Image (tube, rainbow over all chains, first blue to last red; front, side, top):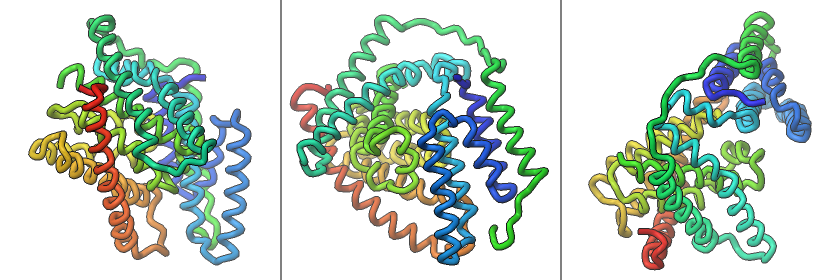
Length: 198
Length: 175
């Protein structure tokens, strides 16, 4: 399921706003829905929320608890957008100006893979963490990619991109809108106010 | 703002984001490390951005890197980093108009400002974004402590990225 960029932004803003209305339990639950496929993250997060409640109530710092839940909500927003982001829809907003960013995002897995391999070899050979040595291979690769991309962009991708904004929501885009509205409505209509919290 | 500048800025911003994600073992843990451990994200990702400014070596380079990073963080819903990258980009742009882009002094000042400002501002905006707890009153002391650590670390990274930039220039990888 791919969501367009404007709808992801609207969804994030709605959930963030709803987390400030009352105790952010509703927004946490709503923000867990789009990342249901990642069972490990959801399970770990629920466990962490419960554990932090018991730890904070033991040490009598329970007034921090709403901020902990809100931080987890923001984390969920990051996971949701990295799971469902449709990067090509950035062209609908930015037109040709957004083209370099969209083209470069294709190289994101390559950079990620190179860096992961470098760090893996460091751990396997038990070398110390030295930024000077570790960043050398990554930097050489990044500079090469930048040069090649500039050449390719000049030779092949040059041209006028017609900007016809396709901002009407598709069926998938209705999901984040509905979720955001649900989060807002729940925290307005059924505000949770626990004594001792907030 | 020509095409070369924009593409270089985009590539180096995306590379910095990707390496920062890879450093925290997996993409799913990246957001956690942004909240918990900005010290780690100020090492190699900062070096990549600094070498990117040296590679662009033109006016508006730092500003473009800042703007593109800000857009990248905005579409991944990390809004407090967006604001801090915008502010840091504008300030580094103004300073680098005077000092230049290559050479030990310029690289050190640029990198120190970029890393320190992004680190401090992300802590401050992160706290503001979460809403300030009533118990924490000494935010100023906390911020001062963090800023000391961030600016010192970024200065060290500035020296390292100067040597890396020199290495890339001499070996002919970077023009």
